[in-house]
Length: 175
Image (cartoon, rainbow, N blue to C red; front, side, top):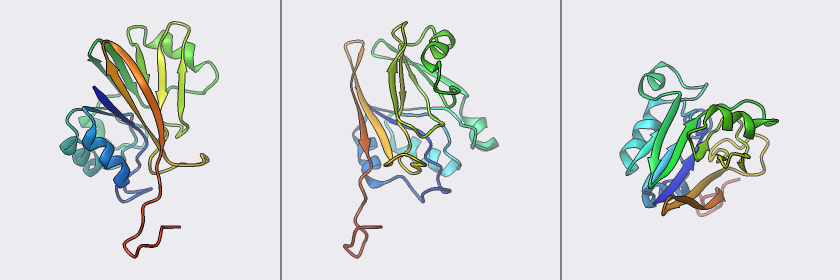
């Protein structure tokens, strides 16, 4: 089972749409996970329509329309892997153990908010993943998203992908 992991897309505030590279990844995925901060209902509807399966939550920048449609915490079991998704987890210091205590029944926690990619494992075995942002890198060197594979009850092949600049319609790469 192929996963695409996204967060903090901030459409249309930071981008008009997801980068084409991300849409191609979505098209090839079995499950898309989004950890919040969509910012508009249209981006949720577009991703929901295009994804085979969407697991998603709202973030702190999401208004009432998104909060009506999305939970604060989502949970799913994917081929035996117990997944939890939440937008905010608090400060980096102590995050692994704090989240392990909050999500004792999860194998993997996907979160967002910071726009800082994160991949760690708590002492309990909980894997914590933050894909960064494909549209708003803030102080990070590049825009990012993650992919992973769930196979035989295990999460494998977690990979952080930089979003590469797309050529403009004039053939000149964007600045």
